[in-house]
Length: 119
Image (tube, rainbow, N blue to C red; front, side, top):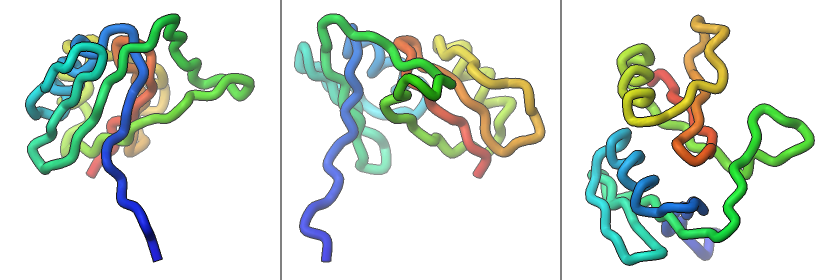
């Protein structure tokens, strides 16, 4: 039997407010700024948190000799439309060769990989 439940996923980054605003543009929600710790309260009740990290080094993807640290799978109804919006917010495409797949890989403005996945 589980003895814990997931509270919040925390992303290290150089500027918590800026990264929270990026994900607010992607996922919606309300940004609550507490300085070096910023939370994004999502419409469904979940949250993402962003923590200031001096000397932040972004993950590398794909790189078998370097950890990607983590990634988010974000479910969307239309990959092309979602891609356009994510890129406009500052995302960078990491893997766009195979357009027939049901997912596409991007990096947020500070390098964390995430996937847009077709629902």
